[in-house]
Length: 502
Image (cartoon, rainbow, N blue to C red; front, side, top):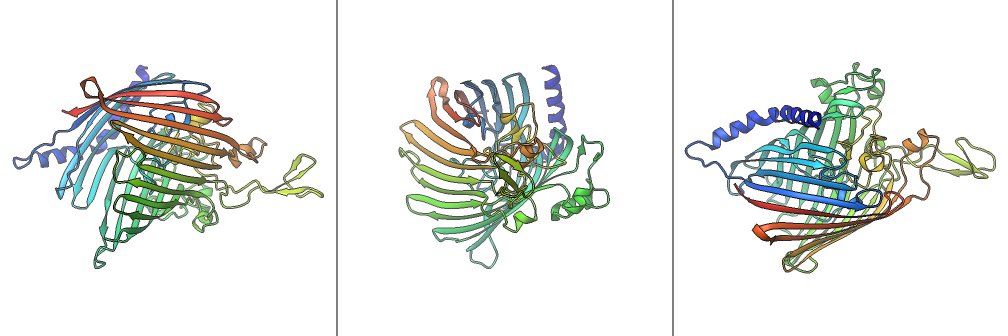
């Protein structure tokens, strides 16, 4: 345990050093005689989750920023403080710190959040680790954004971004935009060490003061730099010229591995987000669509049938018995077309045409969230960064594999929320068919699942704010799984939270 805490402490210290000077500058500026240092609020949480079956149910683990593990017993203490940015000030700052001590199969103590943020008119400058979600999905009931869902721990990074839409000049407010760029640190992950994150995005919106808004967004993520555990690869390109290649998604130079000279330098993944929102007197409703691409074929819409589609409806009155509804359809099986055609004759599979054989297509091989060099793929701390329906290595195989073995899925997700008196609730139900991945199955002499492994995942969450003595908040979450993908599981998660001002 001491070694674990020591390693985590060293990691936290290295990252805090990145933004601590900036934070001190904030304090010095805002602590001048004309300013008052803002007082943060605090939060202390005690939680426990117990399950029966093979592991903790899917919706108790997923989109919890990596808090829980598949172990059937999880206990944790989470404590921290944070301040808030003011909407009334053109220049402002805020900050936050949150520590977690979790015991499941073993004890783990770590920094979950530690950040400082400076607001300069319409832009924010941020440094540190902060819980975030990206995408145009529903904020409270979605199964999770396709590429960044809040499923993994917050990653340390520095960023500059425009968080809210601002008007494009000379358009009378009918055209607006927002966006940002960031640089992050993956740290030590399986198969490679000390590699980086590049992320940039932009959204355009049309509508202005109209009740109907149409928006389009583009996200581009890349993993790059670092040192591979494979001695034939070694240290990966990480200079300024290499960053330009990453920014433009171009092939690497002479210092790059052969595959990254031919294709592009680093592991790239992107998404186009389309949406329409209708804001009425008592309701807000809309639709959204997120695509996924990892190479040129995806950017050319060859995998157009893959993505996340959603529809939502929310009432303005949050105390109605049902004030929110979401339906989502998620599909990732196309992966840009056929891959490894095979022929079936008398129950035997052949990878070449055979007389009398029946022709089959095993599916495309974009191999979402996996990569040949960054073999942990689109994961952080063994949890998928994107949609949790592309299953995290921590869930599917524990310590056996550290890469993604289930990235071909079809899923339907339905969610509701509402309130009765002091009780607020959420209900999730997700049905998924899981087809594994071409890489995993073919590398083992097997084939992708033809009919899919079915799984039902259910969650009911009840929030009772300030109903316990001393103004404590109580949250009770029940999760149930039924199927062959994650097994038949049942579990209860209880957390007690105290919020207040320091």
